[in-house]
Length: 286
Ligand SMILES: [Zn+2]
Image (cartoon, rainbow, N blue to C red; front, top):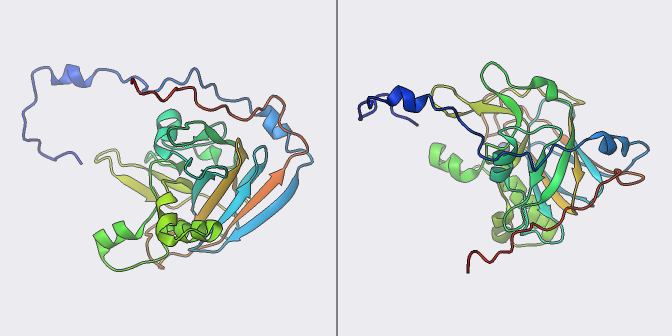
């Protein structure tokens, strides 16, 4: 955080330096927002091939073949979900929250993609529908579906509050990935990564730039829908924060399940092709 009282005096040209207009770090003209029309049309006559109900304060995995859709659906009551994605073919390729944020902004919605980690950096999933897109940004600068938080975890909880809490999203995702892969817990933990905070309403305070949360506007029936660009393993944790109105990393909040459904379209969206490998040659100048 910036100090209330800086130790260094304003330089004479401070106002001019601060008035320089910003430029976008990553102009995305070469990444045009996809036309969602063929994706939405491909849903006609689709069939549901699997579903999993994620219990409160727990996580579960699900598989989504390339060319299929999946939905995360609010059921019973307002609830936030923490989503991890891995390539089913190579789980070392996983969702890259930070670069997705750099490309698409702090909060995702329909038309944005979830990008994979280096050295892959290719689309893993395309968001095709967001029933909370009406929310936009509120007066506090808050919005839903962020890629700015990480995931609640027992280490930060221990650092700030002490104690051992075992149902943070980090631990929930770790247990779920260990169950799915058969990996020892300590190895599975290393595969857990920064999440897409589904339905969570967050932002940065305007005065101190601190990460804030507020009660999620999600209601039962709301959903976030994705199209899988590659074969995926997903894991979703129903956060112990519930709607994240007040606290997380405890059993204090009212929590609800989340439903994940996977759908197979009758045919692939017109014009869709699986993403190519990234074009960088990996020689790193040598
Ligand atoms: Zn959480």
